[in-house]
Structure formats: C-alpha cells, structure tokens
Length: 122
Image (cartoon, rainbow, N blue to C red; front, side, top):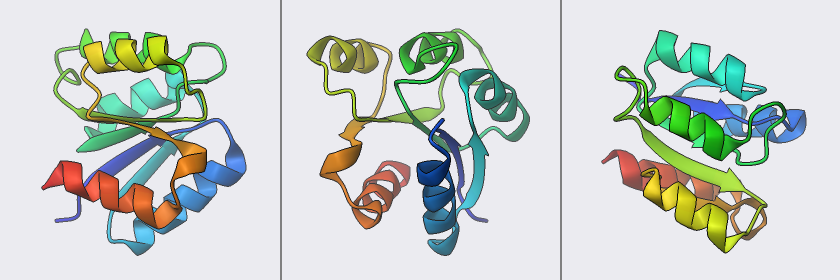
C-alpha cells in the first residue's frame, strides 16, 4: 500500500510539480492550496506525512501546524517544513512543534526532497 503524502503549498507550479514527482515515486498524493483546505484534507485522508509550506495565505504554516498538533486525529502525523523562509525563529518554532525536517526549497532538487521524505517514512 503506497504511503500518503499531503502537500500544503500555495505556489501552483511548485505544488503541481511536487504532486507529479511524488506520484512518479509511488506515493498516493493529495495537495492543498492553503491551510484551511489542507486541514480538512488531512482529517479526511490521514496522510503518513505532510509537506508544509511555511509562508501560506490566510494562516501561516506554523500557526497551521499548532492547530494540527492540537487535533487528536492529526497530532502524530510527521511533518516536513518546506519553505524559502530561512528564519532561525521559524525553524526553532517548527522544531518545537515536532517537524521532522525543515527544508529550504532553493537548497534541494525535487529528487532530494523525495529522498528526504522517504527517509522519514522508513
């Protein structure tokens, strides 16, 4: 049974590209444009891992993550922060909220992102 990945990313080109790359790597992929859509999708599909952009419209990724961690059904899901926001305070907050990795988008190729995600699912 393939692992389920939820991508919460507001940049359409990136979202679509990562959806395609993860599918090609054998994952069952769900994607959301913002936190609200991502939260309801997470509740519905119970992904094995969430790839979360930090800079999202309406509700930033860290606030969203706090909400996820406060929900009994979602609290234990692994989350990889995925952002171009390379801020030490955000990284620390993300770590405190239990992210398993904090990847800076520009520092990783799609193949490297997929490998990092796979490493957290084994």
